[in-house]
Image (cartoon, rainbow, N blue to C red; front, top):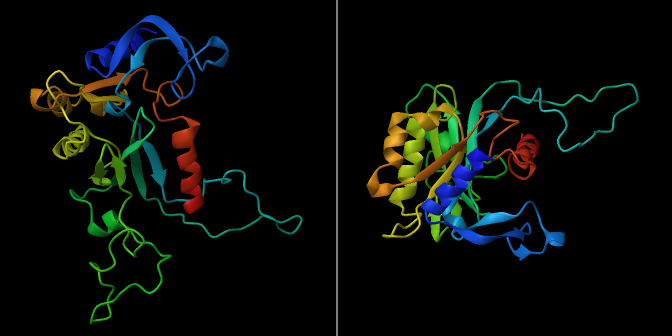
Length: 267
């Protein structure tokens, strides 16, 4: 409980929440209700700026399909005594998906980190290819025209954008040797948010707050320096212990669990 109390205190300090004189019950939508309609325990803190509170949690992915198993319990009908055989990709291409979501329930941004020893993400990795698009436009040399075919619903669709707080937020892509998050990538992500002024800062107003797990990247000196810079101050709290089954902010079935099922389905 001590860890949670510290996080609640930081919410109040960030001016995105207030302490209540009398604890109250709320339902799943955050509305104050009686005990018979409650969802969870009594609360002595009320979040007043839920869109200033963000959560982020990584989910590792692989193009290899050998260990995917059932997709949402789907079964296939085959002849008795036989095992269904399906074509599957067996090559390992690992990457990490890092979604940012707000306490308001809105999607903020999708970040994709590819495992690569290259410093920059190759252009086609950024754009992707939608094989369902038939007859993409071609140039005079009969090659697929990149500029004409780029955008939502086209051959090179790009990553999904989010609309949050009145801004269109791009899908951000990075590379790392292990395909996971690093302190430098975290700095680039928050720098992008600040450059587009996703959370306006005014004197005496709310400070954007991020809650993450206790991965070592959160302790990178560059990241610590960035979030404590008075020109773009952040409140960042991470939970312990760092273990998937114990404290991971995105490992709810409604978020990472649902994503995994849909990822296997798309593969």
